[in-house]
Image 1 (cartoon, rainbow, N blue to C red):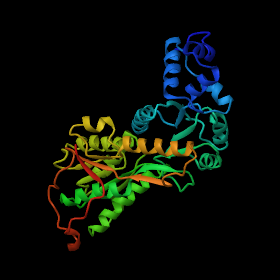
Image 2 (image 1 turned 90 degrees about the vertical axis):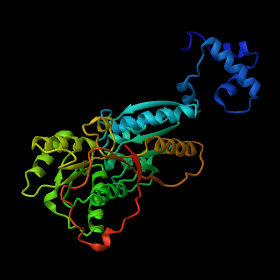
Image 3 (image 1 turned 135 degrees about the vertical axis):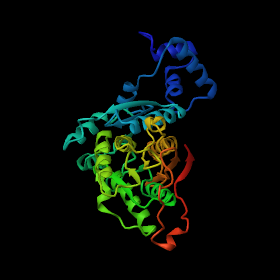
Image 4 (image 1 turned 30 degrees about the vertical axis):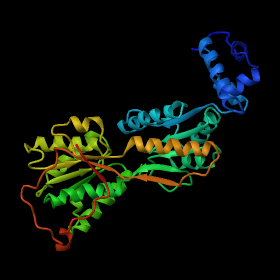
Length: 361
């Protein structure tokens, strides 16, 4: 902690350099030899001095701070990203500040938030899958370096680092088909983030590739929460011909489906196989452990931080959209269909190349 009354003048005096030289050594702006930097930093440490980010900002300098804006700190996925981002920001010797924008997502509020945050840090990372169109439009007009993480709702001029949803879902459903399942249900999440629609697209494509007609009765609406998964699972298990496998657009809904299956006195995966998406901590601890897909949080965080640093330095971005393949974790919640059915499309029997990275659960 900075000691009361300690100034850059004190640091310069102890290091035996001018205040100007001490300022250059501390800020990294302008030339200072490595020997001088070491002396100044040693003096600053001895005195307990830390540069004032607000003072640097007021002078138009760099704050050496990256802002991370989120809107749902209760989300296990958002927390996974924040943890990964924190590690990557530390690696580049910068500081990170988290701003929770919950309640600031309505029309007109995006501009207020953007103005408030401008200048407090060198660049901004937004982990806001539920961003409104108005909020996005405001960010697109901003002059601040900005990178969006895991944003899918619509096309944008801003750089986006995200995981793949379509191919991951396709590979998960194809795995169930390879196990002999033909009545495979899908539980949707809300359409607001765009991720559920993409996962449903992968589900439908896998069925089509195998020559299996999509049964609308096997598609149920949820809201990404466990109770909606429970209700959707109950509806599916009440069908005259219930599914032998369920793919849910999130782990939380998949866990709800597992409870619905147990309520019917059925076992997982002997009677019904279940797959989720996200790999939240509860997925590996479920009984049986939940087969799921996850985005490579650390690799995505690293790409997002590096992309933001390029833009802070005024360098060209690597590319407009950086997309990472999902990782497919096969665990105990999936197994062969109790009564395997033959493929309706003989050509579909040929194995298809997986586009997700399969990981042992």
